[in-house]
Image (cartoon, rainbow, N blue to C red; front, side, top):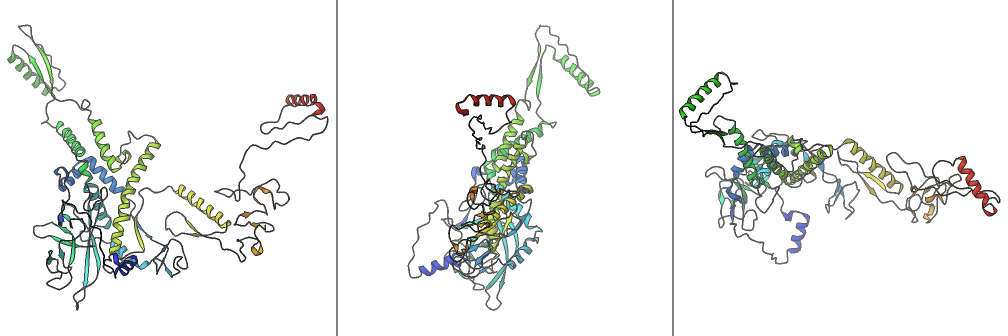
Length: 589
């Protein structure tokens, strides 16, 4: 596998470089950020909340962790699969085709199929465990967890470089394993514009040889070229690790920017901490050291008598928990009473469950997790409501899967020089098999009608996806006639005994649309061929409507016949009435 190709490595890049050689080039200045300095960029900490604090509250809060686990489980529940990026590709202009072609339609050059041998090493690599005994799927779960907490995920590609023993230069490399980079310690190195690099350079063979701006651009040990540092790992005092371009893949999910994302848990910090405080309140309220609910205040002139009385009551309560004390209060002044002073409200008075449900719905709504996936079906009754909840969560999962299919996986395959294949996550919900068969049946019926119009359908290879066809235009016959037309291609001629009209319209038994011309005897009723299974009938369908009125036979002196378009036949009384009305008319009309 070769190294990473820059913009000039593509066909368009080489063309632009060739055209720009005789000219001097000047570019528009990129905007600079006044708060940025060239070098290590630190993520923005809103409200002074550090990244370790975000991970801590995500692990301690029950509701937040349940939501994050649900998203991660639905994201990778069905695994991944490989699919072709194209069916045929031109070797000259690199035009991609999704159907089989003999040559390039654009330039007429030769075409090729995707290279199957390119998948040999990637399939083997993704099936192996890394040095931490983690599978590739477990590493992806860690990446998803980082995205949902701090919106920054770092995937480190541990590369093994192969050096020419004579020249001492790197010839090629291979990706040895894939590990997760901790967002707590990973940092981006960029200049004031946000462009990666611009500060440090490091040797691929001697990582301790770091060059700063203004110093030599070659390694003092081996003399090889030094490469720009794009990411660093600050773990360890004085043991900073430097990574060049292509060794670390960084993605953001919710708020991608030039550098870092914006942590979602930072936005939900107050809601998460409120839920944590509510859990602590319930925990402490059921312990012995909880705050008493209240006190009993007794106004009396004989305090010692009350103390001795309640001491005896406590002793009797220890022996008999069901003992009911009887209290008599004596006051010489005639004044006294018993008062209850409440210290704390009950959970119903504080609306504990209502507040907790509100906080939970805010957190789950941000991530797109419905109540149905939180094992809460109390307020989600009804099949329609449950179906909509599944749709909402499936859309959130689909959005998250595109981060991998469109951003992370293409970068990973580019580093392994795989250009003909695509790595894709399977949808979280399996499609209804009956619905899929019906859609395939409709696609086959459309292909049959396109064949009758003269087009040539070809099945598109989509592996486990739905049946899809591509269509080639009809081939013109010699003399300018369409397929199925009269010999010699005479326009407007009807082939004897059926065939195809000009333009490829099918004819059944020589019948033209509407049943007017070329119709054989016995077909004057405008009958259409029967419909095919699973679709509409072949040919042009006549719209249904009320039957046309039919006039009876007019004979002088005979009553006029009336026509019943629909409904039952008239009874004897109605027939006699109609005959009398017809006889009264002059001339029997």
